[in-house]
Amino acid sequence: EERERKHEVENLRKELELYPSVPGLQMNFVGGADLFGYVGIEAVLDQMRMKTMKAGFEFNIMVVGQSGLGKSTLVNTLFKSKISRKSCTPNYEEKICKTVKLHAVSHVIEEKGVKMKLTVVDTPGFGDQINNENCWEPIVKYINEQYEKFLREELNVNRKRRIPDSRVHCCIYFLPATGHRLRPIDVEFMKRLGKMVSIVPVIAKADTLTVEERQEFKEQIRKDLDANGICVYPQEEFDEDPDERLLNHRIRESIPFAVVGTDQEHQVNGNKVLGRKTKWGIIEVENVAHCEFANLRDLLIRSHLQDLKDVTHNILYENYRVRRLNESNITFSELELSSWPTENGTDKSQL
Ligand SMILES: Nc1nc2c(ncn2[C@@H]2O[C@H](COP(=O)(O)OP(=O)(O)OP(=O)(O)O)[C@@H](O)[C@H]2O)c(=O)[nH]1
Ligand SMILES: [Mg+2]
Image (tube, rainbow, N blue to C red):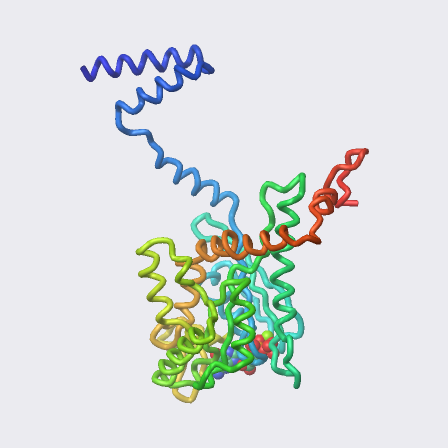
């Protein structure tokens, strides 16, 4: 009987080759393949993998917070730490100064054939001016501009197959290690940002707090975030299944990460480690027993990178897109016409 079936399938295959466009035959053949019980759908995983590897991908992080909390230092720490040590130029020794304007630093990082363009947007800190009113405006403006850029590319008649993605996938928000409550300025800032970008709050310069102080402060911040209705990443309402809920619940319980940044390397037991010299000894930045920098890096790069990209595209950007397209003053025709070929065949948007 088995032989008979195989024979039947073989005949169908031959017929199909003779009449490739006859739909009835196609159906028959699909039925025939079913007899073996294996279709081979999982091969799609290899195809997806190959495509992603060839194309590479973009991931964009932004650092935000009061002046002098170590934002620029942490950007350097990230680039010098394990994610990029191999691909880092050895003489990358920029002296860290006060950041005066918003700017992006990019590195292409390659690991096992997978290419990632990691961009970190460094921003000037607030808190220097006597009046801090609207200090979030440049940040809000930048984030919206990247959404707008993406939207315009999408609406182009002749749109690119791959739209360059400069949207901020994650915003690391620096909280001063005061050990007290969340400050009103941080509440205001995060309330606004939380609606438009995934925020990961961190306690800056955690080496200035004892381990007990850190734990207490973390708990207090979680309470304050909750009491003020501030949404931080990963948001419970976006959890897709019980497994994800369990994993994310553990992260929600350990947020905000108490981080230490540095651009110095020290010798510890004969090994070079990224660290900070304090009166108690060297704090190893990448050692999870010393601080939570590695937890932050793993969340961003290792465990939740694709999720951060998905949340940005499917939820946050989508909200922006719907809002923009519903605004009565957005002229569809204006957007479309801006890339409509003119009579002589050229694209007006490039003129
Ligand atoms: N103790 C301690 N000091 C740090 C840490 N990270 C940075 N610093 C120091 O804090 C100072 C300010 O660091 P920056 O990285 O310039 O801070 P910033 O947030 O970028 O400051 P602005 O650009 O003015 O907003 C520098 O002297 C750093 O060496 C840390 O984790 N612990
Ligand atoms: Mg700076």
